[in-house]
Length: 146
View 1 (tube, rainbow, N blue to C red):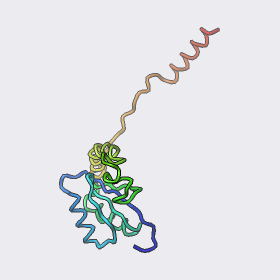
View 2: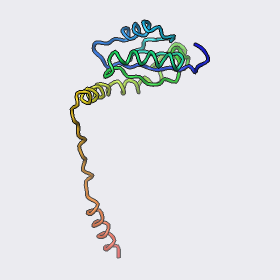
View 3: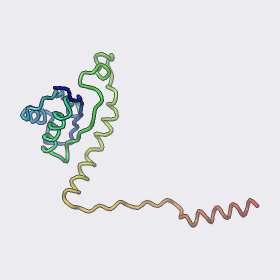
View 4: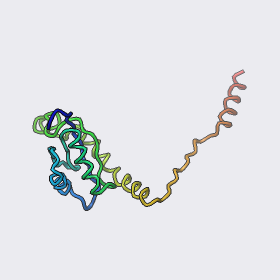
């Protein structure tokens, strides 16, 4: 893999028609010099920065609204993450991935709306009282305190 820094990226899917195995095949076809491991949320890619980024670019083009990529600090099979070396149980970070995974349909929906040009206005939330009313309350309290 050369002298370039080695990185790990996690690929998470929110797709009903793109499978982790489809992505693995795409990576193999790209001939990127990376290690790939399938996970319950997608897959992990490990290699040099340039090779991993090249592979990520290829796979993101498959379905850019439903394939998400994030950095991962430890390599596949690391004893810190591996259940066999830790005596079983869930892996560190699993619960966060589970929460993030539930948000992906909303992110996909928003990306698709942006792609279609659908305008979206953020609702303005009322903060309960106005600044003027807050000043009145302060003045009333100050007057009573005298």
